Amino acid sequence: MNSYMKHGFAVAALSAACNAAFAADDITVIKIGSAAPTTGAIANLGKENENGARLAVEDVNRRGLVINGKKIKLELDAVDDQADPRQGTQVAQRLVDDGVVAVVGHLNSGVSIAASRIYHDAQILQISPDSTNPKFTQQGFNTTYRLVATDAQQSPVLAHYALETLKAKKVAIVDDSTAYGQGLADQFSSAVKSGGATVVAREATNDKTIDFKGVITKIKGQSPDVIFYGGMDATAGPFIKQVAQLGLNAKVLGGDGTCSDEVIALAGPAVDRLVCSIAGLPLSRMKAGPAFEKEYQQRFGMPVQIYAPYAYDAVMVIVDAMKKSGSTDHAKILAAASATDYQGLTGQIQFDDKGDVRSPRLTLYGYKDGKKTLLTTMTP
Image (cartoon, rainbow, N blue to C red; front, side):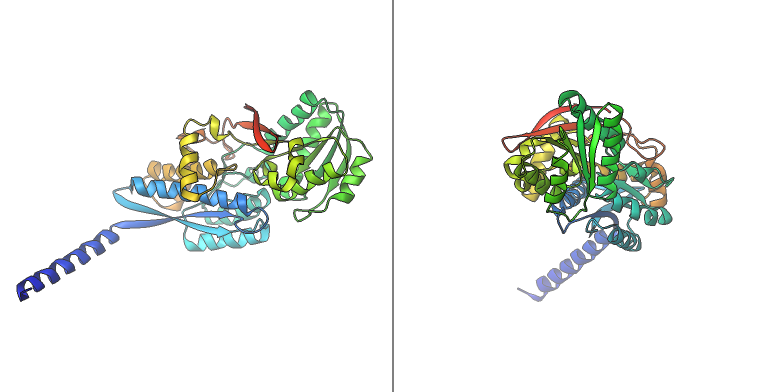
């Protein structure tokens, strides 16, 4: 190689490096937060939230995003809130300090409620894909939004099933003392009482309990037709298994925290006595659900359990607000969110004045031969 060619190659290499630098400079990186329990007993559900949000970020980046003439690259800032309200406030502050423009999260209602003040004080949009306690959006904060039905809508559906399908007259209720579990149980209790049933036992445990024999023994003496459990799959599984072991014939009803694939392994054959609700639609009832399920499975090597589509849509609502406002400023994104009218994976998304999704859907599932089976979908 002569000296001219060497020199030409060097110039070309320098030019390419400069062009790459300029191209990188032309792209603005915007952070979106993801907060969920990705370690601990319900990490399977928290990781699904993160995966759903991550898939949306990757899809947006692949398609390309331009806001106000600027090329935007989204970055997911994912944190583990450990399903703990105290940890939730800490990671919320970390996300604010990291400069996120909006947050997808949290999963647990108690954590969402605790963290919501941090986001409100910073005026950062918070969209939960799965927190169902009504109090979350009843605090007067302009920053709190959710994409699913509330416990005030979910519990009456379960109560109606207990009263009309199972013909329950005597009901026992157990909850895990969290904002989610207790709130769901309170709503269920009110609904079954209004329908004429008697609550013969009301017991509280905690979200770490796995030995329920004492509680179940007390309930057994009341001979309930139905037992309602307010809590998550990590504790619901052992609860259902022990109900069967102690010889109760009652069906167990639970909310969306129990309605996972993980509960099958934890409850064993006894899972067939579980009927649970999801505060949204199943993938099979979403127009693009099968395609999403295939993409999710290929990307993460596992099936969708519950709310990955809602975490995905939470990111898309944030991006839609960027487009509507023509800005990546968090205050302008927040201002645009209230006027959301977006056709998402999970359906048409609009919000009321509290931040709750309009026209939510609910789904009831049973388990047969250890497999989750769709019973019905409805609008509360």
